[in-house]
Length: 196
Image (cartoon, rainbow, N blue to C red):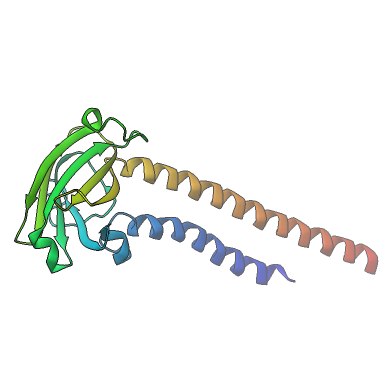
């Protein structure tokens, strides 16, 4: 294997190593995500889940990762028509890993109510970044509960971790290129010694 073949292959590998983390980051958290990630399942029912930050990003939609703190509008749109006749309760809690004391973890509570329009608009001003869970309860007897975890204002942390991953991949790739180069160089020198 000659160095002329290794060089273009390594350049292609480096370009892929740099591009993949950025493309994964660009798609995560936006409406480009797979549609199933934006669907909340509550028992046999389904709702589209989208959030907006009209003061920051205007009409851009987010599913699970809301990029900044501030005024946020979460919209739940019913998929099944039957939901229009059922009471819906919405609660947003801090994701502490424990849901035993809902009152203490609750940052927003909307009591059970029928939404004949087929859409629930939730507006809240998140003043601190963190991880949250939306709890949606359907039915008179609270028969079905759905959960949608999401983060607020943590996109910088995600981008920093992606940055570090990219650096590690780049360093590993450069190390691989250097190893191949020195291996080829060593083989060439040993073959020149053998020939002479």
